[in-house]
Image 1: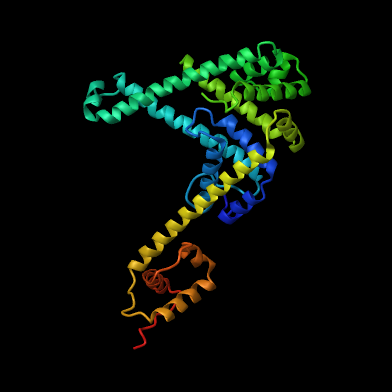
Image 2: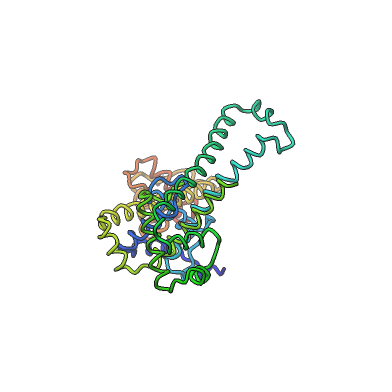
Length: 203
Length: 138
C-alpha cells in the first residue's frame, strides 16, 4: 500500500466534518447491527472508538488506515465490522485457552493455576462463564429471530442460507426468489432484527 | 460446539443485515426512520458529538506523544545558562509559535501560561531550534 494512497489525520478529520445527518443515522444503525457481543454499550461508544483509532492510524500509529480511494462511509462500515469482530474473537480466544487449561489440556495440572493467583483466576472464571452466557444469549436471540419470522418463508430461506454460507444467487436459486423479492426479504430481515433486538443484535 | 455455532450464525445474520443497510438510499433510510418513529436529528446529533469526541481524544493523544518526543529530545540538548527577562522571554516564545501551527499544536494547552511554563516552553523551543537563545541581558 503506497503511503501516498493513505489519508492523513487532517483528511480523516475533514471527512468526518463532511458527514451528513443521514450518514450519522446510517452509522448509528450499522453500529447497532454489529456491536452485539462486544464491550461497546452504545453506537456512540463504537463510533468514538473507531474515529479515535482511524485518526491515530492515519498518524502512523498502527491499525486500519483509510485509503483515499475508498469512500469514507464504506471504510467506516468495514472498520465497525472488523473492530467488533476482532473484539469478539479476542474474548473468545482468551476464554477458550483458559477453559482448555482449566480442563487439564495444558501440561500443567489445572489446580496449579488455582494456586498461582486467585483473584486473576476468579476473574477469568467469571469471564469464561460470561462466554458461555454470551453463547447462550446468541442461541436465545436466534430462537427469537426464527420465531419472529416463522411465517415469512422468504426470510427463513435467507436466514438458512446465511447460516450455511450460501451466496445470494444460490439462495435465490433454491428458493425461487427473484432479485427484487430477495432484496425485499433481506430488508424485512434487517428491520425484523431491529424489532427483535431494538438495542442491537446482542449476544 | 452447538452454542458456539449460535454465535457464528448470529454473526452471519449481522453481516446480511449490514449489507442491506449499506444498500439503502438516503431517501429509503429517511423513510424507514420516519416509519419507525425515530428522531433523525436527535440520532445524528448524538453520533456527531461522539465522532467529534473521538477526534478530540485522538488529537489529545497525538499531542501527548509529540510532547513526550519533544521533551525527550530536549533533555539531550544543552540548555542556555541564563534566560532573558520574563517580558522578552514571552515575546520570543509567542513569536516562535506565531508562524508555526505545528508547534502551537504541541504546546497549546488552552490555559494561561505561568512564568515557569513560559520558561519551560522557551527551553524546549531552543532545544528544537525554533529560536536562538538569548541571555539575561545583564
